[in-house]
Length: 113
Image (cartoon, rainbow, N blue to C red):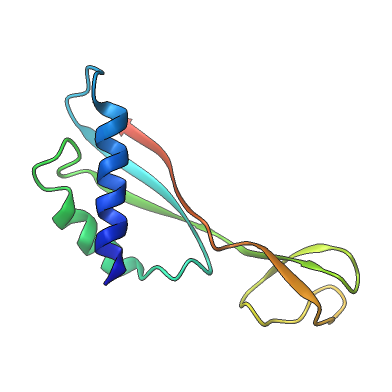
């Protein structure tokens, strides 16, 4: 379950960014997750709750923001949203697509108290 190690990384980032500031706790963590990032959301929620115990983010709400899969179509030269990696271009039906987005995962922001 790599979601546990993802949450350990999130915890490290939170601790690094709150250290030295007058932060009493973290209320909310917003994370952007690309459609093709390979993250199991229920597993991430469970791991988040477990990993944040004893940290400044204990009890924080995890909000996951979905980012669409995107690709550049070399047949029509448009950047398009795609529902799956091997989908054809929704504009022209072409099959020469280079993924340009949807694999990312990042902390968007923190709500602190």
